[in-house]
Image (cartoon, rainbow, N blue to C red; front, top):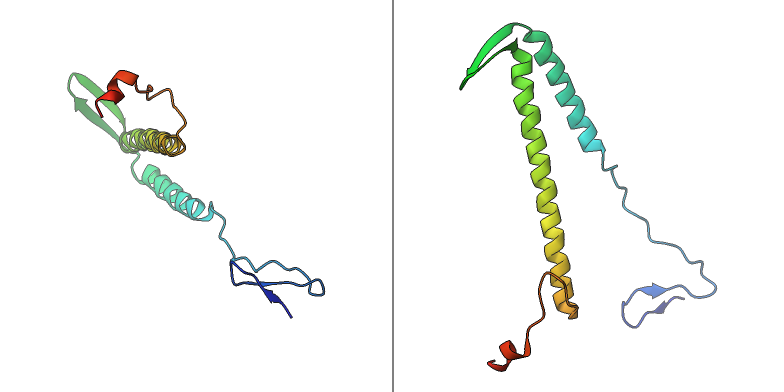
Length: 125
């Protein structure tokens, strides 16, 4: 018979019982959703190129462009995607840095971004 663990309340295997791991939940591969979405976007872009091969003229400020319509539509979309990705990376780094500072403050470890208090500033407290 299995003994009850003191802290967890979970049964502990005895020497006569084999040690087995609990079954793991089946995880979906993390790239599956991105792969499906990427495939859909790729098909949509190919259809956009095939259906919009006519050349168009674009006047913007002092610039005048003449290019296929599909190019005029895809270039701003790609530029927007790059901007979003750069902002996402910057926000991730800022969040990680904030978490590192909070962890350092909790452990009392000094970090170079926050200079130590001088003895004069702590006297008035």
